[in-house]
Length: 385
Ligand code: PMP
Picture (cartoon, rainbow, N blue to C red):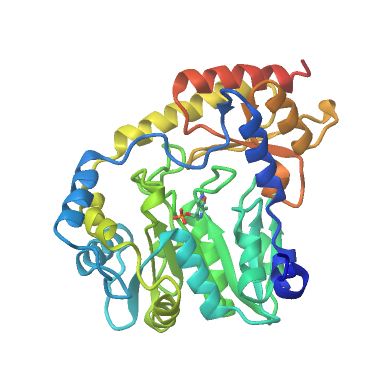
């Protein structure tokens, strides 16, 4: 055997992508009997019945072939109508929308189209895990914008990092792992900064529906897209409708960019899963507010349980809490996550999402009873017990 040598065959970029932090949590989880799993980054509610029924119907009706590269016509219309109604964009010759294989697919296609060696992409720290790896996979360099201590990705913090090489400023609100939501004022400032400097603002809004009362402004989710359409807005279907495995998202922005992204989609993903695109045409009309209220109440449970024993970021959306490991414990986020695992609770160490390993992320996309059980143990640990 062993005719093939990984040393000779594997490309340079494999060494630059590190999955060890996340793998460690999964490995820990695999060794545990019935862990209280507060590490999961997806909703714990099932896909709404009408969408399930529509998926079955689409498969039965033989809608199983390729769709157009840009997406199923009905879903394209529905997504455009949703964006138009929400942020007021009009889809004409200058602005387009592309259905993608998940939000990740949209981020990848955007970076394929925009990034070359020497280019820079500014991302917040803490970040969603794939952000720093986008440049590793598609070219260029990641520039981290430290958002501590309030985890707000503001124009003031971004501006000094912009150079002649900056191509992309990547924002994420509601934020993973912090749950922080941009104010409309902050969103406008970031939009104005990026357009003035001629760099592309990408706004990853995958958790847009999961914005809680204290994150909404005038009852709406704040977005830089309300300021104008010279940016790339990326939204997803997976989190909002509990169908992460259906791999659906969309990107909306300047036609010249969407065209190039579609070109790369043609040579990579080809199209997002056809019957599932058909299934989601009605998704935008579903009322998910009971779920959002449930998640907001869980956020309140987390703050009530941990807020007086450590600093927890002001979670206004998504389904994560970003909690500090108190200095008195004299341990890193990784060590804290290991201590939690010894007590049967899985959380993700902050070092997975940040150059600093001072926090941990817990997901409250978990049934109330399990969540309470986990919170009691975490509270105990945070108090040094
Ligand atoms: N962006 C953020 C901020 C996320 O948290 C996630 C998923 N955890 C994604 C993008 C990727 O989502 P998708 O499953 O749609 O690719």
